[in-house]
Structure formats: C-alpha cells, structure tokens
Image 1 (tube, rainbow, N blue to C red):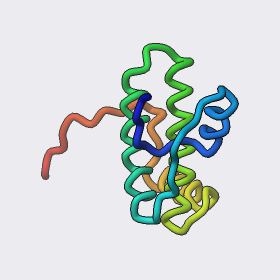
Image 2: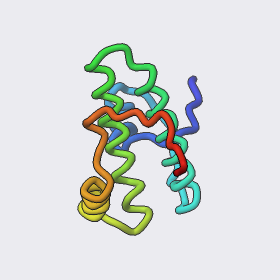
Image 3: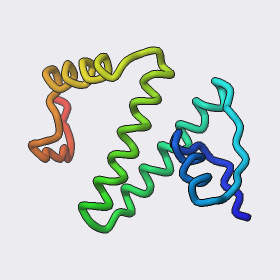
Length: 108
C-alpha cells in the first residue's frame, strides 16, 4: 500500500473509492494547510520545470493556477483582487512579454 502524506485535490478520495480502493485521509488545520499548499506549489513548479512538451507544461501550469487560487484565499483575498494587483504591477512595471534580459546597470 503506497503512502503519500500529501495534500490532494478535493475529488481524489472519490476517485480512489470509485476504483474500489480504500484510503485514509484527515483534514488539515489552518497552519498545516498553509504549509502543505506551499509544499504542493513547490512540487508543481518542479513538475512544470521538468515538462518536456507544451501539453505537459500547460497541465502543470493549471495545477499551479489552482494552487494560486487556494493560496490567495488563505491570505484573505480573492482571485479578482490578485488579478488587480497583477494588472496594476503590469501597468507600473510592465510584464514579461518583451523578453528583456537585464545585464547590468551603471551608476552615473
């Protein structure tokens, strides 16, 4: 029997049960949940970095986006507020579409 000890998506227990398997779960407290979301984000980021094609990359990015939604909520905010912060920063500082790579800055 494999041991996972990790945060999983909400429907995973139902999927396991439909496969005729039994499982053990527990509900995390707020501190554990925050910690496990961060752990899961690092895991998904690594999976994205290791993706070998666009399809795999998009799957991992969708997992990261789902985690960003959950992390936004535990910080007492909404996805809409997160997007507002993102877009405000984009207006003030730009995005990353221009592919600009800063080499150095000389003090004058």
